[in-house]
Amino acid sequence: MPKQSDISAPELTTADISEVIKMAWEDRTTFETIKERIGVREAQVIRIMRSALTASSFKMWRERVRGRKTKHRLLRNPEMKFSDRTVADHRRANC
Image (cartoon, rainbow, N blue to C red; front, top):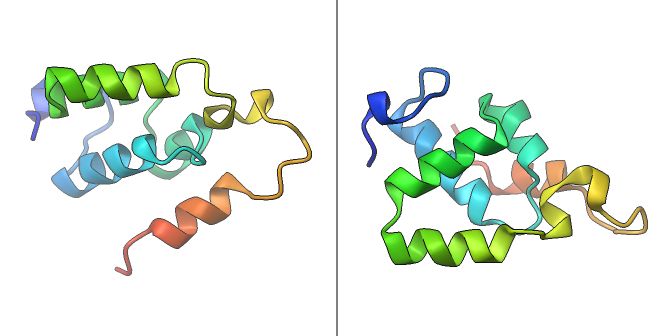
């Protein structure tokens, strides 16, 4: 796991960082939802992913999300039948 000092974000626990990583990999969870849930902007998510993943995994993730319309609410087709908030709620651990 990345060190707290490696990440310019609100004070994140190991569980928060793990949740950011899970949400970032999920195609239907937008960066806006990650910001609402954990308080981490897209640029910070990228820094977290860079420090937490291996170089090859980070490269694969970046290629996967770059330009992906489902990762940004404003780019989505309004006819999409799912809500990223619902998907994120479903994937949250029961605390």
